[in-house]
Image (tube, rainbow, N blue to C red; front, side):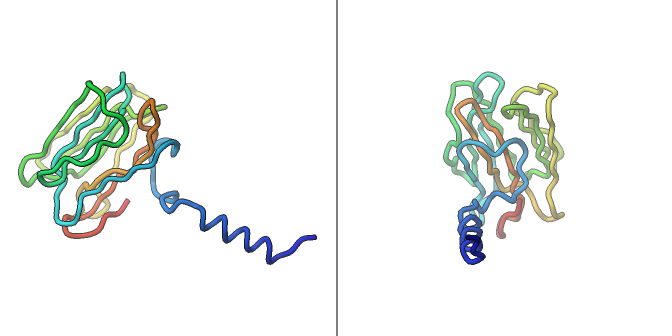
Length: 164
């Protein structure tokens, strides 16, 4: 017999079990291990190190202030690294992906472009800071053994909170 109370209870339980990051804007497919790395309050994004497995981005490590953070994904011998100059900040993030992400790019306020990885012309994304006083604060995403499957860009201010 159909009971409205039972259905409502199941609906509430289903909503409580939904990940909080599911509504964010991700490029690519949200499968695999989830990660999120953003600059701590008061620290600026200063650099990025990308690890490759063939053409796929296999791992990402970011530098906030003077400190390199945790490696997300997998560490390999094939790496590219870029650091920002004092006072330089990221205003645009772009890249390419198909099954895995192949390239990440950044435009700074200097202006200059930072390109990490190869550029197979598959699917592209480009995202600018969401507000005039915001700059790049970090990345969230999903990865599997073969590489990164999705990314979401975080914007904010050095002394504020992040947004997606």
